[in-house]
Image (cartoon, rainbow, N blue to C red; front, side):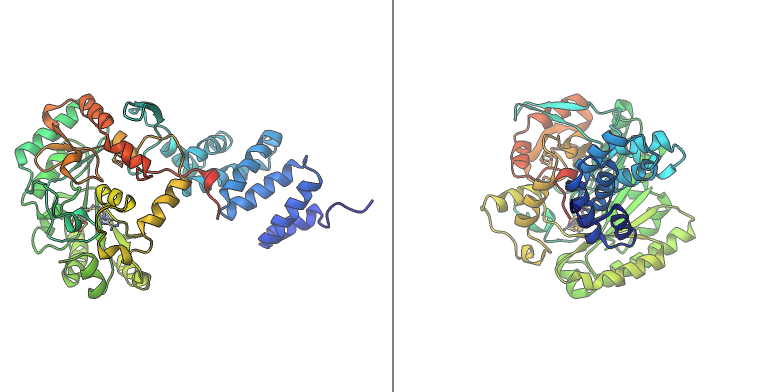
Length: 448
Ligand SMILES: C[S@@+](CC[C@H](N)C(=O)[O-])C[C@H]1O[C@@H](n2cnc3c(N)ncnc32)[C@H](O)[C@@H]1O
Ligand code: SF4
Ligand code: SF4
């Protein structure tokens, strides 16, 4: 009888080892078709597919193969690779079981143990919640934005710049009070956060739609957060002429610098009203002050990319490297949610900046929705509370208009009541309906 496949197992494994991936896939597939009982071939085909980013194909194969011969010593290495690959693709819910298996067999692997700790459900969060507006129960997941509960306190209710992808630049008609949060109100907010202990280690972000470095009392505000043992995180456009040294001396834990390129044409259009030379000078001054005062603030640059901006990646990366700051490029997106809903529903007039985005929201929103896990609650409502400069509470960090403020004062309202108001607000259903809520990828929906 002629052989069912021209491939032998040795040839398939050799192609795999030599990096001839297409050959290896073809060979493993042919071998499996000829004999579906070959668990080790299913295992190998799963691993090749995983390496190719074909998570949709890899996961069913690996699950099947693990049930067949998971006790085999050959899995020791694979378990960690599978868990970490899914973890790096942000598919933490899929990664969990593999990381657990990997840690059970190799408890000394610190990277795998750390990943497992991060993907675990948080003990301060109920695993599921009933959404009364949508009349359905939604599952919670390990939050991605932070491992802890987040309070985003917009200490400055305005900004010196007018980025066209930010509501400060594209929603000027919105009725939104402007101003600086008074020091005594801030202190009351922190005291309530500490007293309520929603999470033992809540994290405090001193921004939402404002520029924190404009606050005249910023060092004192940072000092209050740290005096209560809470982590303090800032994000800034670095377009300021005063206050940098004082901010550094106050030693926030994390500082993100947001920028959108290194040529005046790019930067000053996408960070409208921004001055490139001022921002660059401040990047260097920041390094100088960190060294001068011996401060270990973790600094990273959030580099918003627009069409054509890829050519400036290397220049920004080089400066970050010189200064010891991390560099995280990301395709610029369009905000806030209210403008996105208008765009998707074909209402309103989208700004010209939409054409400068690497992808239109009309492309990336449905794509992200198609890849996301269904039936999940939104992290921006279960793991964050957003407080405006006047002490009022917003539905979440991504909304801007008055209708999406909860009409509650943070210091007067218990956490459970704020939570109820969020879940009773109708806008989340609209947001989820359009695929705009915080989305978590599903490995079975991710092909290369
Ligand atoms: C609205 S800003 C407020 C804080 C401060 N003004 C700043 O720009 O860093 C909050 C965060 O939104 C991010 N952001 C603003 N516009 C963005 C865009 N078009 N794409 C991606 N992230 C953006 C910034 O990087 C920043 O960390
Ligand atoms: S993204 Fe930041 S810098 Fe730009 S307008 Fe908004 S708040 Fe200001
Ligand atoms: S569902 Fe939408 S509106 Fe509601 S919290 Fe999430 S992102 Fe915000």
